[in-house]
Length: 170
Image (cartoon, rainbow, N blue to C red; front, top):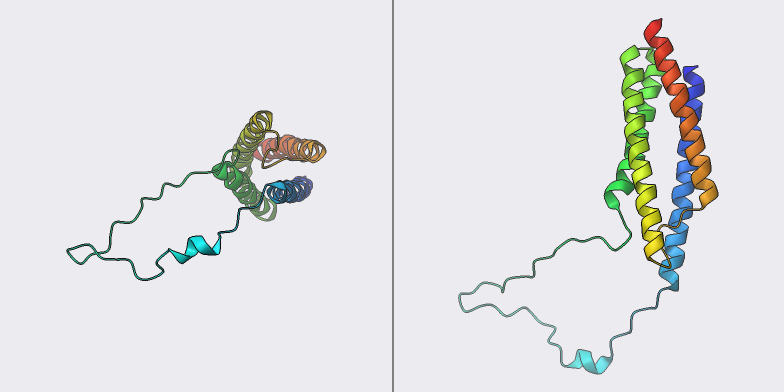
């Protein structure tokens, strides 16, 4: 049964990678449809000094700008990183359980799977909210792939729990 769960988890991962590729393609299409930046005219550049930065009277360079890192509207880098990272970690723990049959690994993999599920649902909800606000969301996931990924993940969650319970009682 542990091998069946492993195959289901790998099928979930394949569906997730397909989903990411489809979302990335929609992001590239949205970026291509956006208006291009205006080229800088040559006469504007003629008055610009392209030399070393002048120093302050005490011989130091002038203070630089303080860059504030922000994410564009509709992007959630923590969710976009955490969901696949947790999924890979969960699959690795389940593989270890499958090969070694150390019972706590089954429950650790289950806990990671639940965390992955929650992060993935959070990502989906944020994406849906952003799609409602904007006409063209940056990550427009195909609904059919979202359903396939979700159904395969749900079945792997159920079988993971059953396998972990059966392993605990053995």
